[in-house]
Image (tube, rainbow, N blue to C red; front, side, top):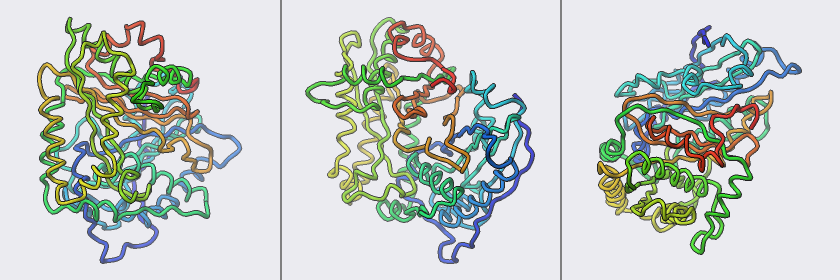
Length: 443
């Protein structure tokens, strides 16, 4: 599959940013995630009854320009780890042609090729992002007229919820909606002001202790509505009376990965699970869902019990217990004078347990309930919303949970050691519930 670059340009905001807003200060929590971008690709089929490709591209560019005026830091460049220079240089915008049909690619998508639809190199990452564009977009036009819109927005200013807000604002502007979405750009830096880089340095040590060396591979596992109902029933207990879909799927994946490790090593090993938690609705009072930046923290659950004796409700209880610690009092503590100490202690505890050689680690991040499948530029909703496949000698055991197009299923994008992955996909008990790399055209 060849992806040819047709053009590169900057899409500048439709109105200039005021002089007093030229430097945008990042928050303390914006230092937490070390990965430079939040990548996502949305695939749209061609609809013969609507506008031509040139007209669609014109709509994308005009609406992006208008959206960047409201999201003015997104039209700037990274100044350093503490700030963005809001210089109105705009978003880096690439147009390509893909020499195949969208249906052909989606019939059996190669996850390792998805990165070709993105405007940034996620394989050969630079140590510093200073001087790079905050917003990078690539619009890929297939031979059939289908379009894949790939975004790499700096993780310094978006987490999953903030990425969703930007996409909702862009697509609603493209459709000409009367209701205009404005971001809350100030809440994060006001709640978690930053004057130095202590959290960046501390979190890099923590993440570094959890990285794995070896050969990794990314696979997609899809769980439909009936399977998730089964998981929820099995995950229900006196401590977790109504497990969520994310809790149930996380518990099942955790149990399955521990079983694969058990088989590979010949004996059970302790395991650490982490889950990134959106703090917006957990703040007291809650902050706007349209708040940009990284308003998240990391929940952790430990398991040192023999996996053969664990039931799904045991692990679901551990997941619920870890996430439920993020109540109003804890989040209030994070924004108080005790916040720095609480963050350090939290990261230190994770690193001390998860960094041990005999301990397995798996991290979860949920994109569910963010409405990525609602993003309609005027030619219908996306046929598929994808993460990115990874192949690297140093990696995190990471699982990204994404809702299916129907909204009642979940795709788990799992990046694991190849040997662990082979154990997982050869487990009959796992395959009873998981569809492995199914075509997005049939789910």
